[in-house]
Amino acid sequence: QVHLVESGGGLVQRGGSLKLSCVVSGGAFADYAMAWFRQAPGKERERESVVSINFSGNGKHYGDAVKGRFTISRHDVLNTVYLKMDRLQPEDPARYYCASRYYYGDQTAEAYDYWGQGTQVTVSS
Image (cartoon, rainbow, N blue to C red):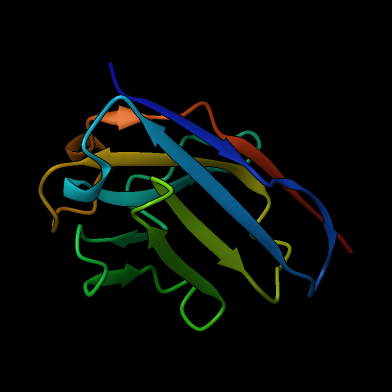
């Protein structure tokens, strides 16, 4: 059984930064493509990933809304994927979910097999 556990969410001022972590257990982390999705309050989870990274770390995708502000990285020894969020904006508050799958490319939520419970990010103005 594959488990994903996110952490690092919290309250931050507009323009501030947060770093989210997602630890994966029970699977072959080094073989997984990883992604972060988000669900804003009162809205459905976004259909496409906010960011994603392939198994080797040399392929990354950033959604237009976060390009230049968010950075995804992975640490295969620690079985962890990170999401560094800088210059947080009023449109960024959401529950952020980590997800994994074996194949990289499809950025839609339906393509991902395993999910965490999410971590909440709140931005104050």
